[in-house]
Image 1 (cartoon, helix red, strand yellow):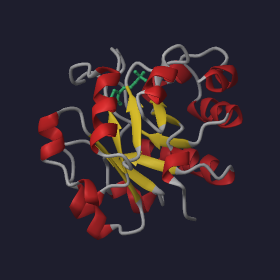
Image 2 (cartoon, helix red, strand yellow):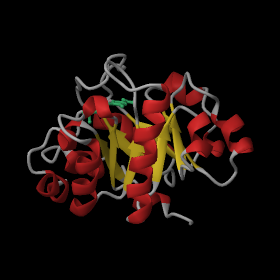
Image 3 (spheres, protein in one colour):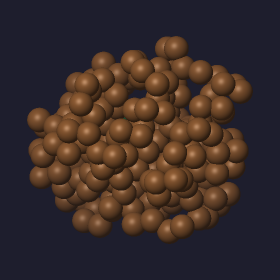
Amino acid sequence: MSWNVNQLLRKYLIMGSQNCPRDPEDILLEAIEGGITAFQFREKGDGALTGEQKIKLGLKLRQICREHSIPFFINDDSELIEELDADGIHVGQDDIPADLLRRQYPDKIIGLSVSSDAELEQSDLSAVDYVGAGPVFFTWTKDDVKPVVGVEWIEKLRARYPDLPIVGIGGINSDNAREVIEAGAQGVAVISAVTNSTAIKETIKDL
Ligand code: 3NM
């Protein structure tokens, strides 16, 4: 299946079991009904599953995405690309280098987090399909999060790379998503605004 990257970045849900106050499968299904355009399995941080349990949950979420034609990404763990037959992978600056991934997986969608000028200088953007720009706002969700970059970082990236697909991340919710788009991002990547919502479908429509 071939995907339109700009389109899939619009409402990009990221989640692992550690983000979920209830069954991750139910949350994903509601989010799909609400209109997410991509999903990233990010089983990471305090309380995250590992080993077989992680794979088992990944396979279930992967299947749900397949049944609803939602592109399925994995976070960082390139061994899971084949195991879960992911459509793409998102990596950070300290993970497996994007150009290596590109050579290994010419047809997968590759995303890279870029949070500063220094990171931008060391990134091979020709190897990636999109960048994640953040944290745009303050977030509690990630422990090792970098300093807040604000929507100004997105404006800067957009000015420098007019055609680069950008997704904003970090502290985004239905109240501030508009600012992220107006700054030039194709979409918003969210965790807690969706996983902690008591009305997921409405939350995603509002985004
Ligand atoms: N990456 P929430 S911020 C996974 O800045 C992640 O690269 C970030 O969670 C980055 O939507 C973040 O709950 C956490 O703020 C996003």
